[in-house]
Image (cartoon, rainbow, N blue to C red; front, top):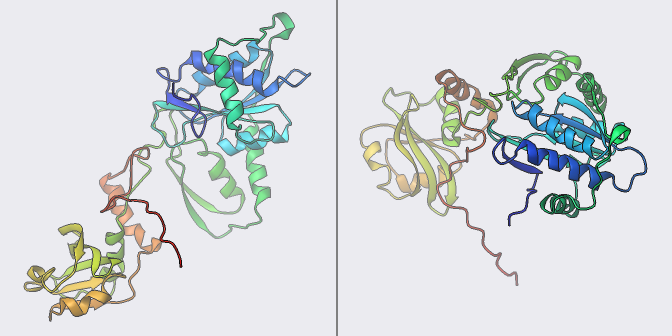
Length: 357
């Protein structure tokens, strides 16, 4: 049987795997395990991200916690670190965040913090899981005044903003800052905090509607294409029909390379080349070709063609991403945050290190 808790709490498709019933049971078992040593009536801080299922699961979890005698404070939509901070600041007994991080909107998760705002140890998570799987043995369900209550707070995010500002000694006056909030829990706190620190803030993806979390928030810029930007903005290439070949060094005479025209249209897709005199001959016989990147210099003697040109000093720098990212933004070319993986030419295989003499 698979373990209920993963590396970051209990996660699954909301209302299918992570149901309101399971959320209620987690509230009951979690409140019991986290507070069973206390003689006072325990209190649990609860927050969530912007997913449409957040209120459903939060209220189910709080109902479960109240059913075993715990009080709850619901702070609504707020970043995960804010729940950890507020849990410790107000000396409540535990904290809970309803969030599934980068996963698509249909997913959600439940993550517990102890009274110090730290993730629970595996042993405590296992104890919570065992109670649920065994129908809550030993848990008492009070009646009358023993039942817990829920308090709703609307000032928690302002309190977290003030804390974040005190935590950094920085003045952002004069800086223009673009913030992509990913339609997530920091859509308000991150923007307001940077403004309070003096920054001129341009916020994007900061209008969550419950269904658009993480939507259209990731643009992928290939490294080889990124390297081409300073070449095209510089003195080379001069010829209208010239081709450019960004190269990343692999090993020996192998490089990862792609052949592009001046409009960055792919002439030959990226591949691993073991470079010899004929590798790029079909392009060199018809065009001037400009080679650059940390794999280029070692290849020039081998390529040895009058139409081959080396452009030195080209590195993949983040500052050159803007025109490529803007182009993809205008074209609507976004990646799925949950499922996007970098493109690697070869599978990564871990090997045992060689023994040193």
